Each structure stands twice: as C-alpha cells, then as structure tokens.
Image (cartoon, rainbow, N blue to C red):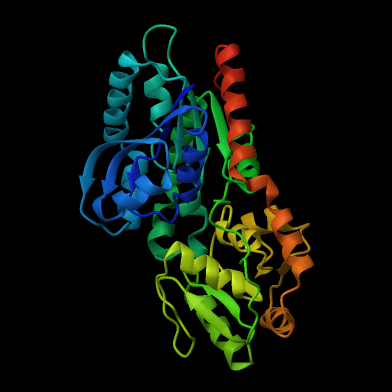
Length: 377
C-alpha cells in the first residue's frame, strides 16, 4: 500500500517520535511518505534518520521556533496549512494514488474533510490519531500556565467542541495515542475509537548489554517537571534520593546531564535503578514505556494516561504523596537491578512494539478499503 503519514508541524523530535517510528516500520513493507507542512531546519536531518526507509515530503523548511501555545492553537484551528497539505497530497495522488492518509498530530484535523471531497471513487482511506483532545487547553486550565486566560476563553469551548466533532467525523478511522485518549474520544464526542497507535522505538530502547550497577540512582527526565513537581523533587533529594536528571530543565543541587543523545539517554535510563516520571498532563506518557523497555521500573502518579496504561503493571509503582514517592524511590535505590525484574519490565511493554502496531494499523486500513471506508460519524 501507499501510505501518507501526516505531521503538519514538526519543530522537534520530542512529541513526534511515535509518528516517526510508525512511519519507519510501515516503510518496511509499504510505500510510505511522511508529509510535513512546516519543518524546523535544525531537526531536519534527525527526522530523516528517524523515519528510515520512508520518504520525506516537506512544503516549507523554517528556522528554529519556540512552540508557544498561541502558535499551536493557530495551527490546530485555521484551515490554511491543511488546505495546502491537501493540495500537495492531491497532486501526488494523481501521479501515484494513495491508499491511506493518516494524520498523526494535534494539527491537520481539517484534512479529513478536504480529502473526503476529492472527486471520484479513488480517494484514500483517511485516519487520525488523537494525541491530545482539543478540549484540554480549556478543561485542564488548573494544570497549565495562564489559568486566567484559559478561564476567559472557556465560553468558546462549546463552539470549539462542535467544530472538532465535525472534523473528527470526517475521517474514516480514528485512533487514540492511548487507551486514555480512546476513552475520552468516546466519552466527550460519542465516537468509538478504532484502536491505539502508541509505539516505542524497540531498536533503540533496550536493556544495557553489560549490567553495570554501581552507586544506585533514580533517573529523572525533566521535560515534564513543572513548578509544583520541582518542590517535590527537591524534597525527595533532601531526604536521600540520589537523582541523575536529564532534559531541558536543570534543577538546583541535582546532577543534571542536560540534553543528551538518544544513545546517552538509553544508557542513563538502562543503568538506573528506577525512573521517576512526574507530569502535569500526559495522554500516554512515552517516557515510562521507554524506561520499561530498558528494563528499568517506573515510579509515577496514578492519573491520566500513565495510570490507564500501566495500572496493572507490577513494574510501575504509583504514588500520590511525597512520602509515598520517597518510599518507592528509596526502595528501588537500595537494591541492585534484578535481571528477572528487568526482563519482566521489557515484556510488559511488548504490545507497544512497532511491528505489531504497524501490522494492526495496516489491517485496519485494508479492511476500510475493502468496505469502501466506514460511514462517517
């Protein structure tokens, strides 16, 4: 099959890794193109590396930019970028027809409507994977910056919800990035999900080949650590937790590696005795899955996507209060890595391996094509 994976706005790899891994895996047996409207020039080479045998089609390459909330909302709501992407896909379709076009982003949700309007019977099956529902910038104001502005914007929520519902129903298939997203899709929109597309890079995230286990430490990714969690981390460190942090946010008094390469990240996680994952909102929580794939147990909070995905996983410890987090961290920190527990952690995320997810997605597309596409809504 000829498949387009559409990620309209790519300014960083983080947040798009699932789409890239899925494109690479599908390209092993299908003709796959990653279709991008706006690609940040500093990450272009890394995107090409991540997608492997898939082709990359870009409308514009732009300098590095910061993804401010206002810019992201603009991309999610306006039609212009999606209209231009639809024209590009239509042009390529005339030369070699697409079998499927899959939007794997919070942006690009007008594409279902545009592609459905193509004349003739040969249009591709359209699909969308929901990462974060458009309602959440309104509903989660308590957990996000600019709570006052979000409260003032609340009267717009019913109109935004109606627009999003119509856009989602214009697609033939709708997936969640997680079971949590699929449940919310059904609950908030009355639209049943066609499955989940969470996937991790199993060629990268693996247990270390050499089991070095010196002074135990807890890996701490800082990408999701907000102001509230910052105080918790410092309290844990003051009470004996040895952290090794990485990511964009340095924390006073805590060893911090900063931005690390993929190989360095895998080594850091794979040698840790546990990973502490704190967050404000996570529909999936890819970092816990990647940690488990490295054989490293996870300590996190019992809510949202991480709890939905791992609530039955004994390699994930859930804690709410600081004292519970401290007990879990110190318990893991005090004991060397257990090879059997590491193997169990890896096995617990088997369902997220790209080969299985890509095969299930391809079968969904084939089924939709055989049936002429499921009815909208």
